Image 1 (tube, rainbow, N blue to C red):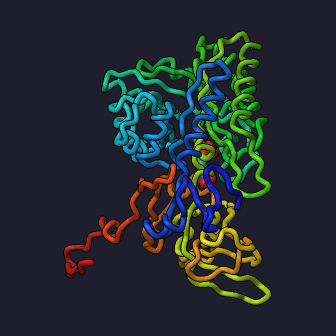
Image 2 (tube, rainbow, N blue to C red):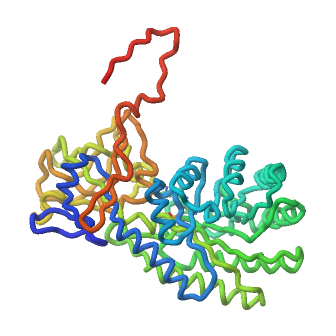
Image 3 (spheres, rainbow, N blue to C red):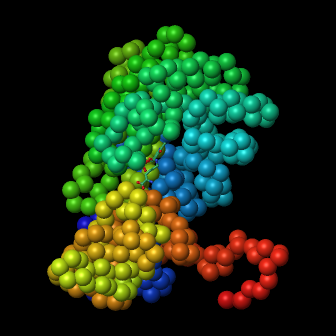
Amino acid sequence: MYLHGTSTINDYGHLQVGGCDTTDLVERFGTPLYVMDEALIRQRCREYVEAFRETGLKFQVAYASKAFCVMAMCRLVEEEGMSLDIVSDGELYTALQAGFPAERIHFHGNNKTPMEIEMAIDAGIGCFVVDNLVELHMLNAIAGQKRQRVNILFRITPGVEAHTHEYISTGQTDSKFGLDLDNGSAYHAIEEATKLPYIKLLGVHSHIGSQIFEVQGFQMAVDKVIGFAAKVRDELKVVFSVINLGGGFGIRYVEGDTPLPISQYVKAIAESISSNFSRYDYPTPEIWVEPGRSIVGDSGTTLYTVGTHKDIPGVRKYVAVDGGMTDNPRPALYQSRYEAMLANRATEKEEELVSIAGKCCESGDMLIWDVTLPEVQSGDILAVSCTGAYNYAMASNYNRIRRPAVVFVNNGEAEVVVERESYENIVGNDRIPARMKQTTKSL
Ligand SMILES: Cc1ncc(COP(=O)(O)O)c(C=O)c1O
Ligand SMILES: N[C@@H](CCCC[NH3+])C(=O)O
């Protein structure tokens, strides 16, 4: 496993993160356990903010909270002076409960409900990223009832396909998201918006995909956007003050992944915007971005306890851990790859090729198909790296498995930011119909 951030091997031969020995963390908090390297998260936030500051342009870095949305994370993002991208009432509620300033919240989503829109207007959020015409008219009507004008960006699909897994590329024409640039839908939406009294159009938003390692996709999106912006200015007399290029900046999960440093993505985007907009004699707009994975992804390490194993001679050896697709569905969903090590035997020679299975009743519940480890024994602690994004966020209770706790570690201190779910949580919303016998056992 690649050691990065504050991860090191300590004198006991144990993996240490944020100054905390992971075997101590396991004793205190149990497994599976999500461990988040707070210093590394803050470092990533600062890399974005500093890189944008250096461009001299106006900007907002909005953390895409879908990657990992808990109150502590919202607080951290607020402390780092960033904005927040949310996609649902649940994410909005989490942010507001954490005291996140509403005016720095941007609301995304292809199917916001009237209730969510109302909740967001009442909270006074900074901007809606409007996905389609149905939403536009609904938003104008609800804002009108409240006599409040709302800021919007239109989400457009620029027709750019990023080099990524087909399920996570979203900038192409055949997408459930956004308004198409090429077929006139985006243009028509802007015409409509200019007629609506409670809508203030700031500009456009595009998100071309996720886990992207190159700048070309973003540059192509800018090229498309500037042509569109110029046409809209010339024909509709609408000038964009904001261009949001979404998220999607890749991270290193496994050897061979080659993301660029954050500063390089930012520099390339800023240069592309400045040069293209000046070419059209267009005032340089504010640049907004929405990184999720690249803020939290490599800060997360999941700790598991090894249980059983099954050796099929000549085929493979399965090693089972006490978690799996319930805490990390990404391998099953996207064939995502991860690296791992034995946290309690971190200096021992890695000599055995094994496959790491989860404990769900599902053959596809595999975390890693091939990883070389010291000869694994029941009770060992397996650490899987780079689990900070879209793991806790996409965790489930399949098989009624309780979701793990999340701890932030920093400077030798560990604090629980999400408690492990309890059995009460598991049955808490269950009800036995009145016509059935009403006996429950106390736990
Ligand atoms: C609109 C939008 N913004 C931002 C993100 C964050 O993406 P990532 O976590 O890849 O940076 C996503 C997810 O892909 C998204 O759909
Ligand atoms: N959830 C996905 C990425 C999609 C992000 C949202 N548009 C992942 O785990 O990689």
